[in-house]
Every structure is written in structure tokens, then in C-alpha cells.
Image (tube, rainbow, N blue to C red; front, side):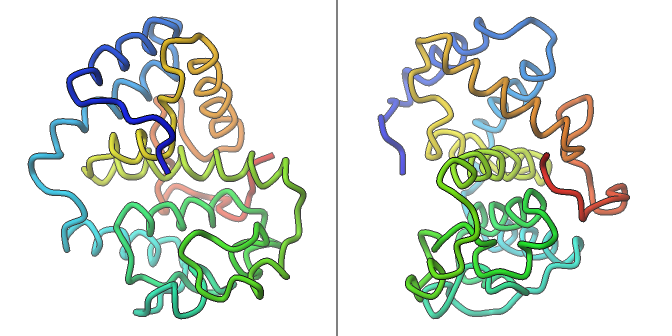
Length: 213
């Protein structure tokens, strides 16, 4: 849920201010430039059938099971498969969670993080929680940003998730840039993005079982 609405007319200034707090040419600056450029894709359609199909294909490419059901009927991820009757960005976010999670938690409901916002069987999902609050927050941030970068890679309007998931919250302050830098660097160190800030594709992901360290 977006905490502070940024009017569309103000968005270019917000992005420019955030960029001004990043080292020029840095990995994070490249990431932000790529995300910001997807603003032009909004006019071409949001959450289209093609977007959803690409998200499902991405899950399958990583060997993640998919079920043609709504997550409200059970769980977003049941320990084996993602339920796919949801928005494209949500499906991609779940793929990112799978990539970020350590192998031992990929068999747990909602990755052992507690019920996702769309999971219907909340008590069961929360019963499977296997990490503390701090780790939940850290992993959610990494999955959020990695999912956004996969949206970019798939030619989808990732800027919307970037806004909705609060990466521009407090954009006037250097701390906003620092948070982005920290998470970009964490994804890079985990081997989930390359030196250009692009996500590692399934065919190049030699060790997809590796979790973010």
C-alpha cells in the first residue's frame, strides 16, 4: 500500500531528486534510470493478459509450480506453487520471493514469512512463520525490488510497483536513496542481479537455490 501519494505531475521531480542523491553511474543509478523509463509504458496498458502470461512463464522458467486459482482460496504460495489469478506484478513479486528465500523455506506456505496480503487462509500461513520480524521486513524489501526489476526486464510498467511499494517514500531526503542503495547492493551480493542491475535470468542462474545472504 502506497503511504504517500505522489501526483503524476510531481513524479519527474521526485525521481530526479532521488537520482541526485545517488553516485553518478553507480549500480543503483542505473537501476533507477531503468525503472523510471518504464513510466512511458503505462500508456500501453497495465496488467494486461500478456503481462500476466509473461509472469506465469517466468515462474515456470524457474521451475516454480503454478495453479490457476485465486490466492484468496488458499495461499499466494503454498510451498510448491503460486496461485496465478492475480495481477501481473503480484505474480512477479511471488517469483522474486521464491528467488530471495533460502531453499529450506521454499517448502513453507508464503515462504515462512507469514500470510501474504492476498492469502485467504491467514491463520495457517501465519502458523508457518519461520523468521523474526526483522528478517520479514528485510526479505520483503529485497523481493519487492527484485520483482520490480523483473517487471522492467519483461517490459512492464514497473514504475507503478516502485510507487505502490513505497520506494519513493521520503524522496526529498537522502535516506530514501540510501535505502535503495542498500537493497540494490544486497541483491547484487546475493547474485540475484548482475553488475548492470539486471536480474539473473533462469538460463544463467547456475545457483538458483542460493538465498540472499
